[in-house]
Length: 305
Image 1: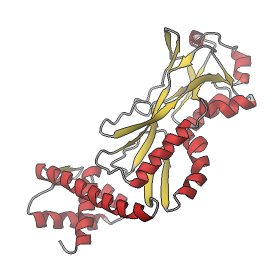
Image 2 (image 1 turned 135 degrees about the horizontal axis):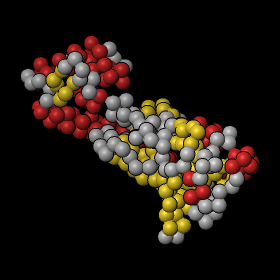
Image 3 (image 1 turned 90 degrees about the vertical axis):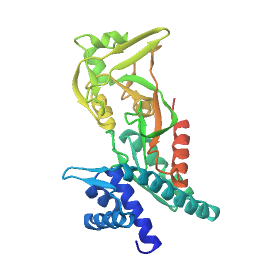
Image 4 (image 1 turned 45 degrees about the vertical axis):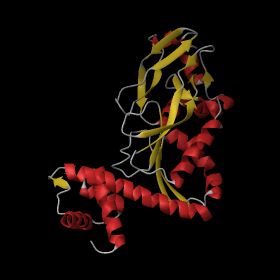
């Protein structure tokens, strides 16, 4: 197996192939050639004298022996990372690269404006931020964590709740001048009203509006002329007068202050949206991930209610 560093790199390669389910995807995330990764796995299997992976033209599946070895390899790499982190943090702040993915409105309105203060506090920490409202394959895409609203679809991830988003129902004055101001949520089901549809990344369907007033609860689907799967575009359609929309308060506060949006249905409350940071269970919660989670938690606490 060569030197200790070679053994370490080989273990990393094996873990990535198992998690990605592909030599090509593992090689891409490790920034190595597919040939190099293939050779590392072949050397590992030769050293152990056991087959760890079954390869087909379409996918790579782990054997029973490979699954047991994967669990031990993950723990070993996590222990090594913890040892490195404990030494580094004794004399310095967290450092290294952290890959995260966040919803597009949250990135634009919350995360990016707060980056200068975060960088000043952790100058040795690099962030690679994917901005998307679509579901991300955290393990396959080699992402350290994702920030998401609502219930997480991937039950294999560990989720840390960082707060709840308060939502409201809004419309542009131009839309209300044409369609009239709805007095009750059920009015949105009338033929002369439209909503702006938001497409679920999980189901591909337009999400309904859920409102409550005391013990009364209503669910509104509404008719739409346009439906979108990106939060910033969704807000833009509402500002353009394409219909009624429901938004986290932080997304609407500037538009309401400027008069570009009007809040509807006083006395009714939207179901709040839980927000979480999610990460793979076998990824060690390193110091850099921990400070990011704590930062997200503080940003959520400072959002307008």
